[in-house]
Image (cartoon, rainbow, N blue to C red; front, side, top):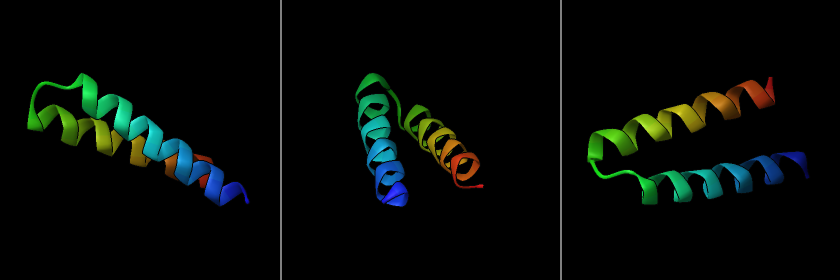
Length: 43
């Protein structure tokens, strides 16, 4: 249950940050940031 919530939040964050970025590099950095936040939440 918690894992599904984290995944849903990460996907929502990716969607919001991807729409705010203007470059491919910026999207990549945002995705990495979301990934790191997800790892910290799971640990």
